[in-house]
Structure formats: structure tokens, C-alpha cells
Image (cartoon, rainbow, N blue to C red):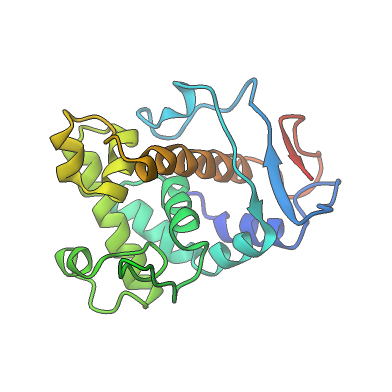
Length: 211
């Protein structure tokens, strides 16, 4: 898989308010439903199979992601997981905070539970490089387990693969998981557009506006 080398530059530019001639007034990126988009880099990635949704990414979140862009890119390339999916999970799980700890005990950028961390070779979940590597390996495992179905892989990341299988290889009927999957997909769509938006002029297309 070819990984775009400009991820950090694009995220940094977004964080500094530079990607468009219309500077952000609220420090957030919001896109509307896309009419026409570039073809996805991964044929099974659901950009082209559903109505696209977008989720705001603050400039602070973009700047935090940019700090980890080299590791995100390397893990994306190494394990064959889309950059936008790795970024989306980080944003949904921790907002880019490498020291985040959930009430359930999940830790770090991709909120790895201790058992999951051990399973994928993570010694220190608060180390961003280890955490991203472990989380991306887990996503790769889930994608393989569910035959490339990104929705089920994302559901498995939240609820565990056993629960996805328990409910017939469908998204489990848990309110948290039912909300989690579209949020991750929406973040991924926004990152997808950031990666395909010129850093300088011309301005963003009408369906991907700063507000």
C-alpha cells in the first residue's frame, strides 16, 4: 500500500488554519454530504458504498495527530490499514491524548485494554509508538477476521470480536457500539478529505468547508 508522505504537513496545515483561503472561524473542519469524491485507496473501504458523513475535527486534534503522523503512516503501511481509519480510531478513542485512561482501564491514544495490549505486544500503552502499533495490529486482525468488513472491524474494536460473532457477524445491539461505528466512519471521511484537499489554493470544494 502506498502511504501519502504529506500526512503530517496536511494535518499541521489544517491545525494552523492554512489549507484553504477561508480561514476557520471556530477552529473546526466540517464537511457536508459529498456529491463526488475521489476513489478510495482501499477497494473495500466503505467511502463509496454509503452516504458519506463527516465529523468535525478541531485544529487542536489535527495538531495532535500531526505529531504522530510518521508512526501512523508506518503502521498503516506495515499492517495494511488505511491511514484515515487509524486516525479516526485515535480521534474517537482519545481525541489524540496519549495519556488518556478510560473508566474501564483502556489506555493511550487508541485506548488499549491491558489484555489487548499484551496480546499485540505492547509493553507501555502510554508510549504513542507502541500504542499505535498495537491498535493498528488489532485493526488488521479484526479486518482479517471479518473478511475486510470495516464496519464489523470497527464494531469489534469497541465491543470485542467475540460479541460481533455472538450476534451473527453483525454490529452488536449495544447502544455504545451502535453509536461508535458511525462516529469512527465519519472521522475517517473527514481525514480522507483533508488528505485530498490542497494545502494552498484552490479553496476547499463546496462539500468540505471550514466553519
